[in-house]
Length: 138
Length: 415
Image (cartoon, rainbow over all chains, first blue to last red; front, top):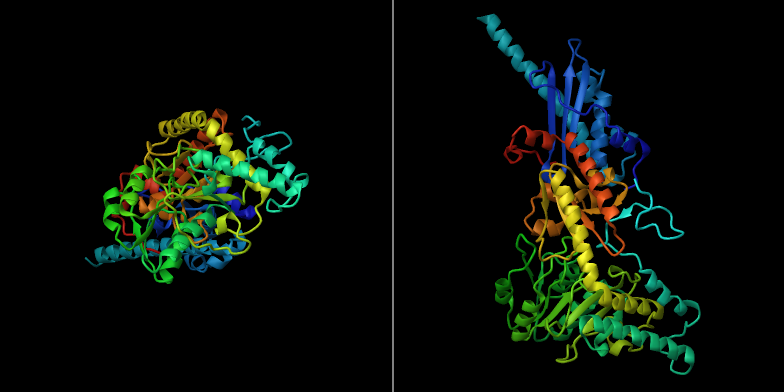
């Protein structure tokens, strides 16, 4: 597979590999894909009090395109608000990395991973808020 | 690391270390030497009857024919030159099926056959033939009882490859031959990966048709052969019509240098097969042991014993194959991962063994050959171990496994 320099760079020097601690506050985790398909991405965001994504981490089981797409995703979400991060399109990822047509689905999975992480964070916020408001109501 | 690899022949640039000997092999320099005169000096058409250019070319072709025959225990009159094993497989299957179609319209083959056999069978199905695709066991071998049960009095041909190209396992040819002979069914074997690597004897094994590939045995690409039994005679329709060359089975001017190359490759293999097999087994064991000692959770695909010595097919759990290959760019290997196939399907051979999809995606095929060295093997071990460890650190599946989470218990959303 003839990959672009940017893609190879993300493969050789992936950004933000790792995981946040299980007990860390403000973390949203997106887990997308399936081992049977050969593509699994775990993307985590850490949201600051200002509502912006302060940090992001990823781990990926997949080909070079999958690794690069998820690495790039963690780079791009940092500093954005959740609404801004949700707007990241797979086409932008694919274009930046010059993904070959047969690998476009890797960028789609990366977009899904971002959205899944955001949703997970919001769901946790929601249940935290309802616990607090229940307590406040007592 | 050493810069002089086995692949650095004189005047050649430094290459990645070649560990893909099942995909193809370099020509043995002795083969090239044997071929050269027939390009510019002795360039005659071997079918030209009237002058010495033709005669000397014909002599070379006939010598090559005997060399091919000797390697498999056949008579030279039973060897047909073709453009390669794909053509030989097509000719054997379609040729026999078409000849028999009024009386017998059933074909038996195996799910792990090479695409050219499977696709030829599919094509014959469209013509109205019925095909049984026998499954394989987890070790990659067919169940002989299933074969016996599948044969009917309408069965025209049984086709079972001698050695599988992905996992290197060796089918029980003599037993299959005996079963087919007893039932009066033609037995064809695609022996592209077997010829010159394991001893073959078409009479002892009761083989009726055998496909041979030049570029799998250090011969040139573009040439192969089909062994066609004469006693009892195998009846077959030709696919390529014309001047009636090759007993009418395959018209066309024979490419003398290529035939000479195939013949020389076979002659060399016959002499060196035993010693080469021992050496390759030693290298292969060194490679496998080296990887197993340093990497947990790796699995060999296919039987270890009933296997050609130069092949390993290993799944490295939690690490995807194409990503792994990118991390070992100094090694030329191949993978059963979907990402490496144009169709995005994981290897059908591995799936047929019952290897789960996620493990199929993590497989590497390592093929050692005549020019592989111990240094190649040690280098490969180092680099594969490093790359697997790095990718496991990056893998959410490895992380889950380390935490004791059962990956199978998770409900994955298929995308």
